[in-house]
Length: 266
Length: 266
DNA sequence: GTCATCGTGTTGTCCTGACAAAAACGCGGC
DNA sequence: GCCGCGTTTTTGTCAGGACAACACGATGAC
Image (cartoon, each protein chain N blue to C red):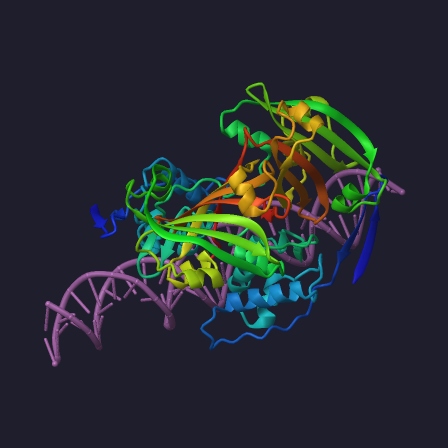
């Protein structure tokens, strides 16, 4: 390994580590139903995450790598490309493929707040405040693409972390898509229930803003009246293009902020 | 074309249009330096955007399409895949590839506020409030990965739309990366200047929150004291992994909110 | 009429091969 | 010592083929 500390005149020091191509052995199972490129991608990602492939280390050229693994070059490229898309690798023509220096985390998924908190070790809890079927208001009908007045589920929940309120969630779901059991809503999250019901989420439009809390909102969240709140509205669509959920949520700005990583698409 | 209106008992009506494979002719230039798959992807995207390929219309099978265009199947697949990654197309094995129903816009880019406003026809303006070189504070040094006290650019700008203040932007850039001309900062945006300087942005970590305005902030933005503000902190990295920018921004929540679309990665 | 089964169409995966383009390196000339 | 040029290395693009997996409709059995 060569380590070349680059000292710049302006005091901006950045250690450029250029590791020799790693000689990793990957275990590929051709009898597995899991695609070969996916097996390779997962093992590469695992190696990167566990530091076996440190930041800046070269991956070794594709042709040699393919030969060593007994794969064809397109298969190896497909595996590498999937990690490039995730932001874990960078390819440079004439140089090679290397692991990015900066630590990359998730690039903003359509994650439920439940998953977010759970990942952060916040032991989330849910209190279902309401779970009814109501006629759609004009706002809800427009967002979900249903007729005004048609039946929609309305779920109101309070999300807590460590017993403290964090957010008030208000969701609308078209009637008939999903059976919304109050007990399950408390134990899991709405998005998990959708996945379990065979709904494949595709995309969502979100809008994040801020405003001051009304007396009622402040009361429900344990904030002083007029406190700053983070607001989020979201409409989620499945892969057939129909809207499957519309939600307007408010978060305690003193206790929660949206953290995410985003990638620049080349 | 077959049009099958699906009427559900719950009043949820969604017209499923399944168009016969479109017979589009694309103009591919083999002498162009622009890759063939990219030419095809752009023309497909254009056709979708202009409604030539309506939502739900099938693309026709890949093999026939490849033959008709005089391309190989991998090339056609690469073009299609890039649009699937953008969320414009959906592939289904055994069925075909079709245009998604929901209108898809940009999936949250690392866009500057300047571009955002310009795209929205808001005719943005910039007033540079300060453009200095200062020693890095502990916070800035930590975010940029430089030594505390080392020289960094500090740019403070006020962004206006239609002459009204929208946001206060405070950016830090390591010294020596970029020449930060005040005149250019007013005419363009920071990110455009970075791209022009040969810096290829790779990823960024963002944090969005809310709080109430101090008297000074309210004064600068034309808001009443204590108004709700939207806050955003961002650290941007280039493809070598070094931090190239750190910014803390505040937005008038009464006039601006973050709008974006996000895709579920399969 | 209803259900299981088979056939067909389409995308998913994987292979081999070839040339082009870009970046880095080494060498020679100055 | 420095610059320029060619060489080498590596990824980028493209072709053509083969089989597998899955979805859907049609067909037949019951």
